[in-house]
Image (cartoon, rainbow over all chains, first blue to last red):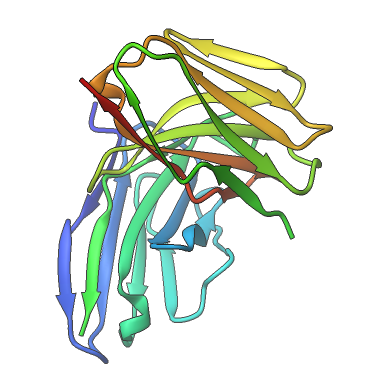
Length: 114
Length: 111
């Protein structure tokens, strides 16, 4: 049981380049999330998908787009990368809307934008 | 705006000691609170989730308490081991989708 998987693990981009971070979960969870983790800022929610076919903005959505491809997969796209997007990105999933369910996290993608 | 604070930012104790990590939040209108562990360069592992109607939750050597009225939670680790060394994060759950995280406490257990 792999849980939440993310690809790639590491990435270096030049300013202005684009890329897509991939996330998949095999727990049949309905809700999926993208966070970024920065020193001194903690983890902040970028976007989330409460269920297949829906997406909503979180705390820091500017510069990002997301796609909920199906129930398993939720991707995060940087259209024109900026140095301020250098961060560690985590994908998470949860069984459903009910807040009593725990969130489960992937291993993260370390992104550097030069 | 909800703010979550964890004190201390770092803690170093000898093996075998019992210890308490603290988490405080400014808005008591929370649904639940979740404690995580993060090892260096890794993702977050869920340790305990306390429902707003509960006062505490236990898993093995870990015990987490929640006092909504005072805006506080504690994570108690009994008989600490070097393998417990990690960063511990608390997050409050507001609404069905929003987790607000503290900055974490970096714990080192010395053999």
